[in-house]
Amino acid sequence: MIKIRGHHLLCALTFAGRGYSRQFERDFKAITKRMRANEMMQIVDRPDEICQSVQDCDGSHCYEPRIDQRDQLALADISALLGHELKVGDEIAPAELFTEKMRTAFRDNQIRRGCFDCQWRDFCDQIAADGFQNTLLLAEK
Ligand code: SF4
Image (cartoon, rainbow, N blue to C red; front, side):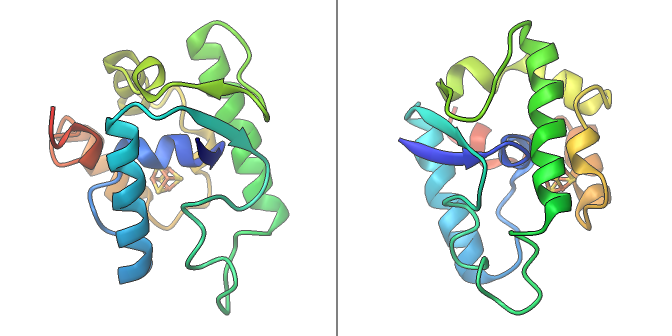
């Protein structure tokens, strides 16, 4: 079971191998591999497996209230897209969530409220504009 916080459901969609550190990138790559194998995900309201290598670093934002807010906004937007509520504690399969419908909604800014104040915004905008072709979730499909 992959434990994942709300806004990381957006980040997983755009992850192309780049991140805060080499270890962060290795961890995230390993998690996207599990997602490609369709391992179930469970929504959590705290730092998750993706945060693992950076959550205790100086300047880490993992425990900040604004990041919790981003999780909540992401879950609200994704719930609206799915047509049913997705909340902390729920489980969902990657294949059910990471669909073309979600990529289109991301590209069209319909599910991006959880991205507010994120330093990677321009990078993710470009990933979406390029059709997500370099993202690891699509790497071996
Ligand atoms: S802009 Fe930031 S929060 Fe949004 S998907 Fe990209 S990395 Fe994640």
